[in-house]
Image (cartoon, rainbow, N blue to C red; front, side, top):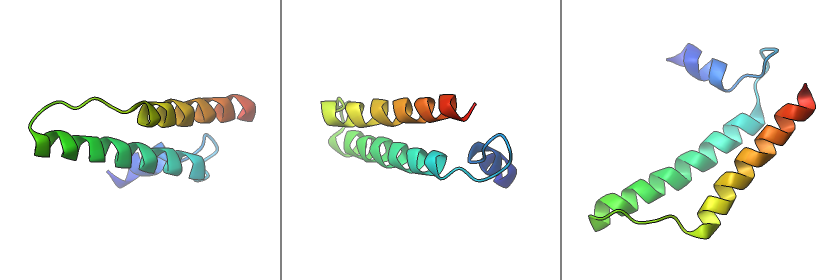
Length: 70
C-alpha cells in the first residue's frame, strides 16, 4: 500500500509532487464531507456548484501543469 501511494504522489522522474498531494487532499475533503452529509441526512444530496467548480478547476490546473511538464 505504501508503494502504491508513493507512486501515486510521485512524478515520472520519481520526485514527490506537491500538486498531486494538494489535489488529493482537496478531493478527499470535498468527497468526504459530501459523503458524511449524505449519510447523516439519509438521502443523496447534490453537490453545490462551488464544489463542482473547485473540483473541475483543480483537475484542469493539474492537467495543464502535466502538459507543460512534458
